[in-house]
Image 1 (cartoon, rainbow, N blue to C red):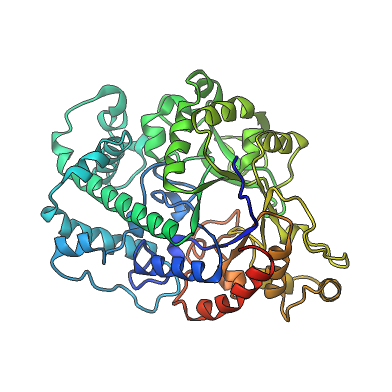
Image 2: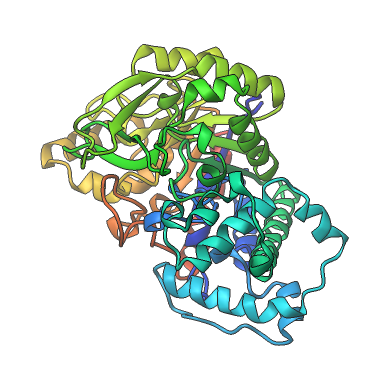
Length: 488
C-alpha cells in the first residue's frame, strides 16, 4: 500500500445521495458540483459506496456484477443522451429527499430505451465492448429480462447453463446490444467524472464488497469459484454471528467462495475484480476484511446467522498474488468488529490502513489528545452502518453525555454540539486520512442514517440531499478547520 504522504481529509457521500430531480443521484452536474465543493473546502478525497448494479434489497453489497455499473446512476442530461433523444428527458421528482429506486430505474431505463435506436457505435464503443466482462454481463441481463427478473438458478436450463452449454443468442441480440449500450454510457460518464475530480485535486475512494450476490453474473458465469450445489444454489452462505447490531447475527445470504478452487486458479477472479476497481477508483476500500482471515460459514438451510462456524481463508496467499499483479494499487480495509489478532497481523503485514470509528473508540471522561493514535489509519466519525453522531450521542445516558461533554471541553474539542465536536476530533486524529460523512458534517439525526445492519428494505440506502445549500454553508467553516488541522 502506498499511503498518503501528508495528512488529508475527505467526505463520505454515496453517489445515490446527491441532489437530483430524477429520483437518484447521478454522475452529472450535481456530482461535478460536489467535487467543486470538496476542492474549495480543501478536502482531497470523496468516498462513495459501491456503484455496481444493485441487487437484492437495493443493497450495494448484493450486486448483480463486480464490473457493471447500475444504470440508476446514469445522467440523463448527458450531451450524448440528449443528442440521441433530441430533447430533454424531463424530471421525475424535483423535491425528493429519498432515493426512489424502482421509479428512478424504470424512468431512466425507459428514457434510455427511447434513446438507443439512434445510437451509432464508434471506435470508443468498440474498445469498451472488447472488455472481457461486457458481453457476458449483457447476455446475463438479457436472459434475466427475458425471465421476468427471477434469479438465474430458476431460468430454463439452456439459459441457466449457457456459459457451459453455449447456444444460439440470435433471439437475444437486440437486448444484449441495449444492455451493452447502457453499460457504455455508465462507463464513459464515470470516467469523465473521475477525470474531472482528479483534475480538481480530488481522489475517489471506491468500495469493493467482499462478496457478490448469488443472482449475479459473477456466480452465473463462474460457478466453480463458489460453494454451490448442482442446481446452482449455495450450500453455505455468508454473514456474521450475533453482535452489537443483531442478536440473531446477520445472514447476508451471499454464496461463499471455494477458496481451494480460487487458489488453484491463482486467484484470477479476485485479481480481475481488483484490477478493474483500481482502474475505476484512486483508492480501493475492501469491505469486511476480516473474512480474508476467518469467515462465518452459515449452512444455507439456516434462517439466521446464529448457527455457523468460523473457517480460515488463505489471506496471505491471496494478497501476495494480488500485489504481485497490482503493485501500485492503493487499499483501505474495513477491519471493524470483534477481530482476532491474526486479522490485524494480516492487515499490518501488507501495511494496509484500517478504519478508526470514533463512535467506537471515544471514551467519555478520558482526555482527548490531538494527534493521538496510529497514523496508518483512516479516521471516521461513523460509517454508513452507524447511527449519525447526533442520534448516537443523544441515545446515551445523561451521565454519559455529561461526562463526554466535559472531557471534550477540557481537551478543547467541544464545538457547541456533538456532531461538530466529533468532526473536530476526527480532523485532529493522528490518522493520515480523516473521512467525514456528510450527514455528520451537517449534524443530522437518524432520518439521514444510510443503513441499519441486520435489516432489509426501506429506509435503508434511501437518504439523499435535497440540495447543497446547507452543505455549502457548512463547508465554508470546514475549510478553516481542515487547514488548522494540517490536512491540506
